[in-house]
Length: 461
Image (cartoon, rainbow, N blue to C red; front, side, top):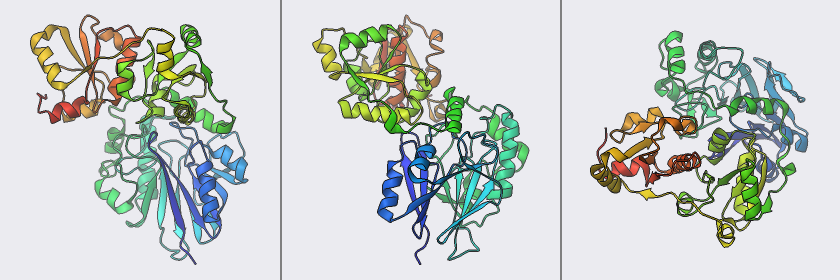
């Protein structure tokens, strides 16, 4: 008999991990992403039938594909009791189990990140007395734990206290060699210090995870709640969408090709033009007033944070396939109102004779020279998170994290040349487009961000 198999699927732009567990022709999928074809293809390749779909909780940062996957496979959906899910599902409680082949999945109630959060202990019946793995959802990450502020009915301190007991009563007593498979990796908004590692063990986390090293519950609560960044506004909407179940991705209409005059008219009526090309292409030439969020990087996450879920969107991409990929990634976070795309891209805009805008690019040495020549005319805006500035800053820089730039733009001096930077250039390009759209004319992007500044040996504070 073959051992139980675990397959991991990872979406880099959402830092989201989902899993398929298979044994003797049957499979379970844990925390599926919205587009579900890859699970069906894997199951077909392996000769497995998907009979179980498990959500570790109602996710706030992405739209789950549990409903579509259930409709296409006939599988049951399992959620922790108290989720309030409005679709057919099995509400599991502590000790509930699923058996298939050599696999036994045992549910552990682990409230804290959310009230209904569960973890799934997996035993291979070839070694029935020792759990081989535990799928921890957003309860325990590699290097971190889930944020405790996603409940309208409980305070962050109350949730953090629940999370402390879930970790210490349910997960830490597992054998040290039990492998941990979380739902997110580095870059997710559901934690602050996640590792980029794909898995760990209970023993390693007990030795290295700052949250598990807290000596008592009170200290743990302070660690998690002091200076906790505010949750993005779209999180609550995402939870409710997952509570109802999202429509299949295939039902989303294809974006219409829009001629430049139509794009301009719709933009004047409030539609948002989103340019998804690489930063350098956007910098050289773009539709005035457009927001730049490159398809590389954490595109969907930043789009949801900056645009919200209700914006009417017009995409600018390199080609129709690029646009279609953009639409899919937006759908993964619930941004579905894509009304069209700029036909022939920026080239079509130029051919129609419409005005273009651009963002100047400044290197570190050029910025130093400008600061020496006209110190009163230059301002530097750092759009990294406050935690990133611990590793060094450009002297005199202003700190406004990217997620707050649009609402705090009035704090900035419009009469100065505003040079914007982040770590490597992705977020600063977004920020320059937001500032230009808000009416700032003297805006420039620092090439290579703080990484390039530091590598060049330029002054750091």
